[in-house]
Each structure stands twice: as C-alpha cells, then as structure tokens.
Length: 129
Image (cartoon, rainbow, N blue to C red; front, side):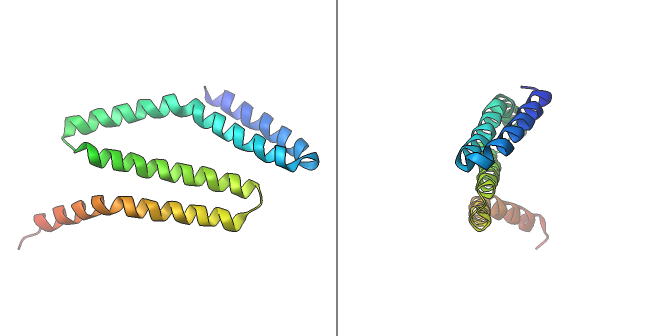
C-alpha cells in the first residue's frame, strides 16, 4: 500500500468518523480502531523486509541475535503502546492513555537492562585500570 492510498484511507475514515460520531460515538471509535489496525496490517510487509535487512546486518557484523531480537521487541512495544494510547485518547480517556504509555515505557526499560549492562561492561573494559 502506497502513502497516497494510506492518506486517502485516513482522510476518508476521518470524514466518516466525524459524521458518525454525532449519532453513534461507539461506532466512530470502532471505525477509528479498525482503520488503524488495517493500516498497521498493510505495513506488515514493509516491516518484515526491514527486519530481514537488520537480521542480515547483525549476522554479518557478528552481533548476537538476542540483542537484535530485544531491540525489535522494544520497538514493537513502543509502537503498540502508542497505538493503544491513541485509540484510548480517541475515546476521551486521557488518564488511561497516559498509564498505557507509562506501562510501555516501563516494559522498554526492563527489556533494555541487559543491553545497557553489556554496554557498560564494554565501556569499563575499554577504560585503563
């Protein structure tokens, strides 16, 4: 799916949501969620090709795959948390959206600890004793 198609779908969905929201707010929220999920699913092919390239680069450079997988999981958590928070904001629940974002950040921090510790150990090993 090309960017013009995505923008067109987004604009059409926005117009429909604005019209539907006055009569059936729940349907407007569902339409917003489905359009977002549809756009995400349309991008899966692009995402998988990027992941493939990153895996090839990691293999060639000798980086252990566990670090790449962790980084990809961290990126996934960030995108999913943001997506969920935006849907929750669309429903008018700003405080819940903020908590979802906070939880995403905490999960990212937890997953990053092993990578951060390896970086710190590497830096300490490079420093003269």
